[in-house]
Image (cartoon, rainbow, N blue to C red; front, side):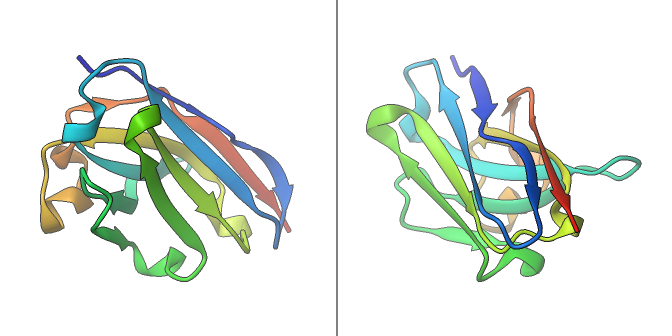
Length: 125
């Protein structure tokens, strides 16, 4: 069983960095693809980044390529999102998800069956 909890959000200025963490308190973390999504007020939840079960494959939405890095430590049941050069448009609640998706199937909400509660990221200009 998977239970996810995000942390690491906060209020920062444009250009700053944050590292989000998502910990699974279950014991099957290593078999799942993991993803980070975000949702701004009044908008739908959108894909940010995904990583395969073994960490060998990653993918990002175009707006964060070169700024964000997704990684995972299966020994710690944790997936990370290192966010650099933050912009005001990165402001959102960030969610991690776990699922059996592959490839482009990991770019959509439906690719994940379990979600965390979210962590707020606010970037001021």
